[in-house]
Length: 90
Image (cartoon, rainbow, N blue to C red; front, side, top):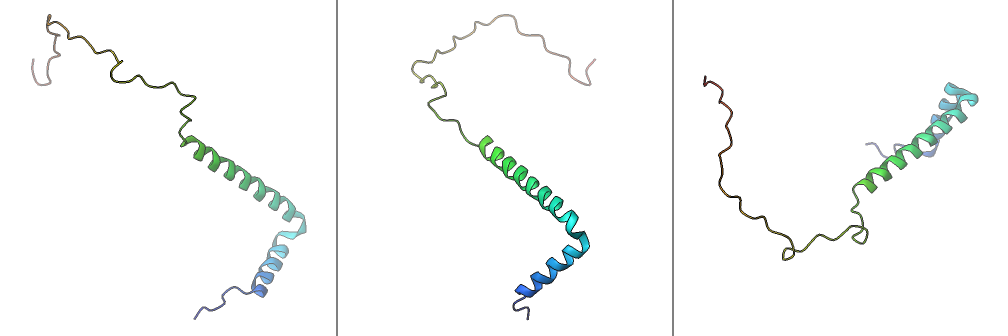
């Protein structure tokens, strides 16, 4: 039913209508603004992509291995910590 929806002459008509509506004076400014917006979009997309990247292992300090890590010594039982009164108790 909708074969060959956009043919070259359709695009030509669209271009002519746009030129009549906006005039030749505003078209360069519009194209410049569109190009600037595309550059901003591209740089933001690249920045988001770089934010998700993992830094190389050579620049990060290596984590200590499990055998060389110090273990915590047990704490001797002392005075129990005071507990805050619960809601509903006086």
